Image (cartoon, rainbow, N blue to C red; front, top):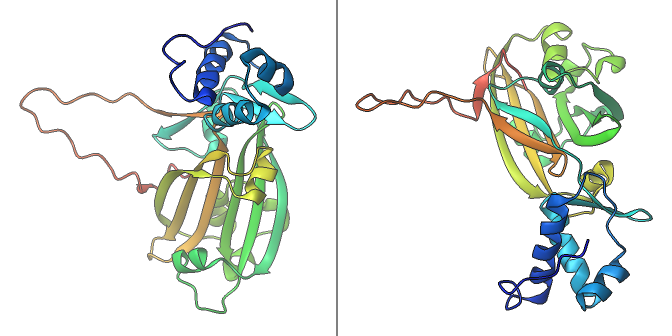
Length: 266
């Protein structure tokens, strides 16, 4: 890797110039390529280690590289595609792509106090308890996402602990016998919380794509609240091609992204 900052970047702050020079090299490099050490890069670009780390931090937050203590900085592998529309469970989406999803249960508690935001979404009373499950999602041994879900204890009592690694909505429908109605769903890019970052194997504060959903029964009662945080260096998002409206015709109203057909599930 010998690319140097060009004339267009020399007038920018030094760490941005280094970032752009490294970005060009990384784009041309093979996945999992190990970059030179921070000391070597700092010497090559004639900058301090602090400046070099700022540049690497930007590249990591954009998903182009991964940094791990003891291993160094590597070029991120080819990203897995996640279909946003039409929306399928993660398991079904990857199965259709010929990919095998591995699920590891990190935590399962049958009775715990939920965060205030979860209590509000589930419309629970102040002292109500919930079951919580945390899952790690992997493909080919690589972590792609961290899941956390909360279910009212009365519903959680209807299924067995060994079933918590299965798709949550399928468990609620098939084991807890919940008649599912609708799904309120949103997606947001956020800095990773420390506990999520540890599970994902990234630096705390690195951006993740957070997908949150509240599932409701046919009677309109919330039955679960879930959050999935994707590593942006390992997952990209896709919407299936749709026909564009022709001249003079009114475009069909698109379904709200927050309210998806429950039959497709999350």
